[in-house]
Length: 265
Image (cartoon, rainbow, N blue to C red; front, side, top):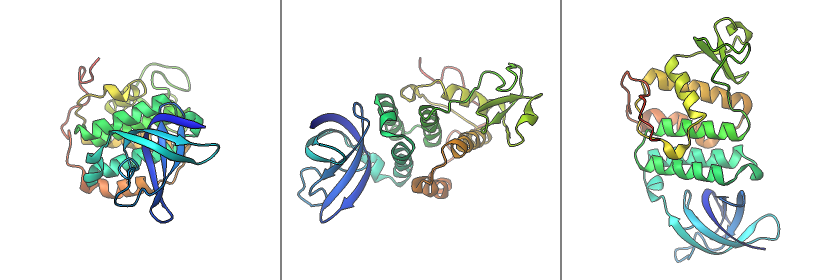
């Protein structure tokens, strides 16, 4: 069967002499593996189309399993994400997360749009750590683990202060804190951000200023939840964690937490 769809290259693997197998995240057919013949050759018609992070229109033939590219056109090359090490590191993690965390039938139009927005935000100079944490939250939700952030997950109380239970998937009030000894004692700023992230479309992400302490708490909450419910060994995440202190300047490292109105309606 011949398919024609928009897609974003989330994986590129050399195959044989001059060929490549790419995985694309599409807006209509989930994830698809495609053989691109001659992709590594200098005069290849499709070499640029097969580059990581490229958003394009792909026409490919597939009976079952791996498809074969017939034709393609680049819509957005996202060349900035490949040219700058720091952006490439963040984008590679987002791409591998899509590839590894979601089954084919879970990868629909919504995650395609969120990945598009993630790449656009990175290119536009928005805080890459906040951008990635918001994208991680979207993946967690798509995998079925949306945390309860409005009331205590144990007794239903709406009275704080709260701790975050990544194991139980939500917040615990002071009285119920002992239900989960591993719960993270987290400030209001990080909890407000995490609550917002569960509701915010990445396409609406605006400028935001977050203190270093709040950013660290937010990271601990999201990463702990991912490790508890989606234990994946991602090479890109290991590399990001090693390189991030060197890659990212002190973005938004003031003492303020998210300010109302920072996110366009």
